[in-house]
Structure formats: C-alpha cells, structure tokens
Image 1: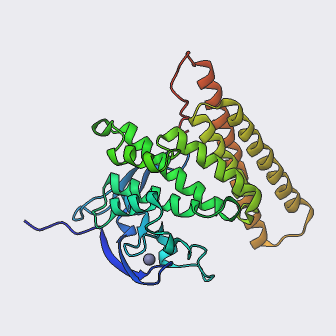
Image 2: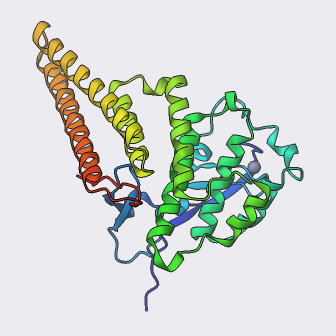
Image 3: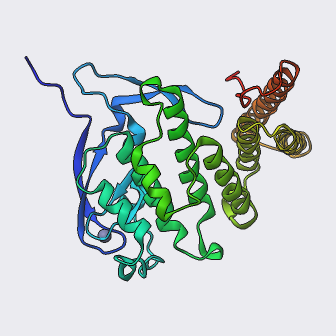
Length: 305
Ligand SMILES: [Zn+2]
C-alpha cells in the first residue's frame, strides 16, 4: 500500500537567539484551509485538500523551538528574524537557573508534535517573552500567545477523550504557580495584553484594525461571562465603525474622486458596513444569551452568525 505524504518537511534556519542551526517541521500551507472559525478567530475545523496526505492538527506546528538554547517563538520569527539585536540575549546565561524554563525545555526536547508538546511550546514561548520586564514586553505577541493557549484549553474541554489537564501542567505549576491553566485564565491574560498593546502599539492605527480588536475583546469578555465589558467593547466597536463609515461617505461626496479612488472608497464603505453588521449580530447574541440565562449557566459562547 502506498504510504501517505507527510504534510510537513524539515526546515533548518539559524536560531534568532543563539544563531546556531535549528530544525523544525514546516507545514505545507497549501494542503489545508480553515473550514469553521470561532468568533475569536480560532479555527474549529480544517479541511484537507489532499487525500494522499497524512492529516495533522496545524496549530501544533505554530511554535518553533531551538533545542540548543531553548528559544521558542512563532515560526514567522524564525523564518524572518528581526533585524535589531535580540532583546533576549540574556536568556542564554539564564539557562540552568530558571527552573520553569529548564522544565519546559526538557519536556519538549526531541519529541513529536502532539497536544502536550504543542502546549509545552506555547507555555515556553510565553515564558521567554515574560522574562522581559513588563515595560519591555511585546504585548501584541503575548496577547496572541495567550489566545492560542486559551484555544488549546477549549480544545481540551471539547475533546471528551482528553478531559484531564495534562500531567505536565500540574508539575509546571510547582515552578510557575500563577501559570494560566484553563481557558478562562488564558483569556484573562489575553485581554490584559491586548488592552496594553492597544495603548502602546502603532499597529492599531487603522480604524478597521481597531474595530476588529474591540470586537475580539468583546467576544473574549463574553466567553468568560463578563457581559458588561463585552457590551462596552461592542459599543466601542460600533462607535468607531459608524464614524469610519460617515468619514468615508463624506470623502466620496465632497471630493472629486476618479474611478479608481471611487472603487477603493466604495470597497472600504462595504467593509465598514460589514463590521457594523458583525457588531449588531454580536450585540444580539449577547442579548439573547442574557434572556436565556439561568443561574450558574456556563459562560456565554456567542454564535458564529
Ligand atoms: Zn538557539
């Protein structure tokens, strides 16, 4: 029988921290696409386009790792390291003195990617970033990493064959007592870092990015049952989306725009309109959940509408 094709291949690049070659599995991105997506952007189900390929769970391959120095980050950072000298140089002499770092690096060392190893890499990536002082941290990146951790715990809750928290997580909390060990705790950290990033990062300069962030924060608050902050974020998103649509209409009405510009403006107006519709749907789902609420109900999960 013909063996199935591997969905990934080994890619060797210099480690962004120690500069020594390190090899990680690189997924062939054209073999799958997202089929179902949760409101907070987690892909619930993937569709594989090839029938001659072994299927794997793509999120397990998101983080890359250097087995020599333990540095762990998004694959994109390994493939296109920042031009500026790494802010993490001092992590290297840290090895052997940081029990959390050593525990996690030992746990993931030379192992195939499965749920536990992917979770270990997620924790290690967070821990490396949090070795920096709070003011020097990349809040946007930590927001993404904690969101991925939240998704992993959601996956654990949804998969009845894995109802127990992995054993290594219990051991990890001996060294890292306030580690996030549930979807709720990971979402609380995600919200903290996304909000910090919003006030410090220029990446939210575009109104569409801002609206997207407010909606994401709204969904996350709703997910952990905080209806008040969820409504507040929905109102922020709505206010910004209406403001954007009005300013685009004014540009269209009161300026002489040629065919190409008009087309681009109309596309932006359609995008703003679709954002407004998303906010309305989100507000409706909050209202519906509140009307159907029963004492001690599980946290609200907004619909995918
Ligand atoms: Zn390294």
